[in-house]
Length: 361
Ligand code: ADP
Ligand code: MG
Image 1: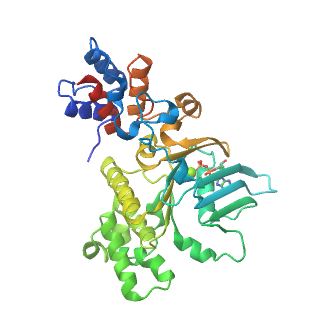
Image 2: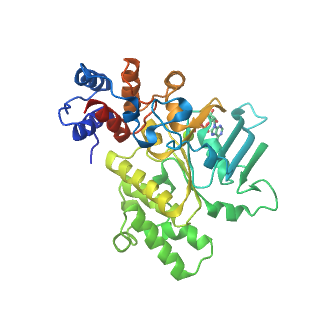
Image 3: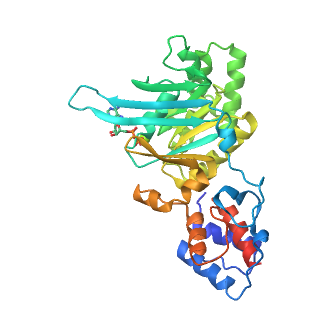
């Protein structure tokens, strides 16, 4: 259940596609060096050959890209399923402990899209997320879901909470019932669904997160392991069958296997249900896997936003905020800096491996 460091995983992935590539390189610097060594003496391929599918980004001037290959999501993104406009928030306003958490945030997420919120600790990520399902109400600014203003007295806020599932940071702490089955059933019961429907939803949600229903429904929540608590909390949110999932640092504290399972589950949830995802994270590798669009928050403001692969290309700006680009991106950037004709922002390990292997073989 342990993971390789991303640079080592990249070396393995390149090796699988181009067998002479060494598999014993474990840091980004070592992988860069090995690629340069393997590349030495090769003639530069026609740029068109290097354009492997959706890594291409004509807008950013990738070499050899034909238009139409881009997976730039700007158009789909402008459907405005979730809209945040000019949002300010001050905690404990008017007291000596007053803290300004948000200073005018704008954000838009299209239906079925996944947006990542990154930023250093204290930048306002958790505060922002709590507005999306109406846990907090705007003092200044507006939050709309599917065109409905959440602060509007006409809006049924209870219904909104069922449409937008929210998973707090350290979700294991959010269990409060004695038995796992009851905890997962809490939301569907609160929705007033019939018994049989509640049971079916609980079963489906528990199976989806990898807690088999028969085996876990009567387990005491206090006897679950950390990873199982995390899963049970997520099952409780999925049992609402929400249209939107809002997750606050969902992989924090998970071991690599549980993290991998969670990422797979979220991807499947999006594919099968067409769900919309908003995820705050510190983990840039998670972001690369989960979100097509990224907002960088700093000191309560959005300082950068765009397709995730373009945000990752701004490594200086990320570093300035104490964030780092994923190792696969760092390797490709280093290789580009040495003149290798790679397209400008691959994200995941397998995308980077595809490009590099195509260059070497
Ligand atoms: P992040 O999730 O990015 O770490 P938060 O939204 O938790 O950021 O915090 C933004 C700012 O608001 C920080 O300065 C934090 O100390 C403050 N803050 C967060 N929650 C509260 C609260 N309940 N009461 C007072 N201040 C808070
Ligand atoms: Mg937070």
